[in-house]
Length: 123
Image 1 (cartoon, one colour):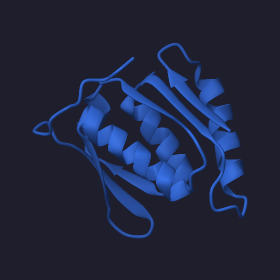
Image 2: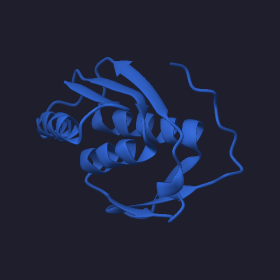
Image 3: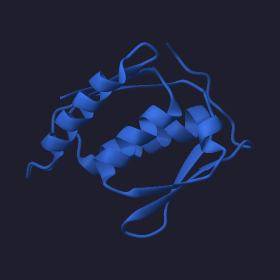
């Protein structure tokens, strides 16, 4: 399973990868082999994959769409859906100051906190 997003990637390719990712997560296995490769993806691209993967409704702060810091995340090892979601959440908070907070079983709050330290990204 491969999830890839970059500056030059076409939206259709991302949609195909998301579909493959979601179909793999509907299988009964606890941990699946997947590769996550965000190489300069926008926070919105990462949030879109997160939304599709989690099935949660994202309640977004209006400032979130104005954040344009690139997200870099590479991981290739077996992991559960919840582990994958945690990786996305950590990348968003550390690299873009975007915080995901669970509201209930179906919704999360997505906010931007400009006071958070932003880690230098590696290419």
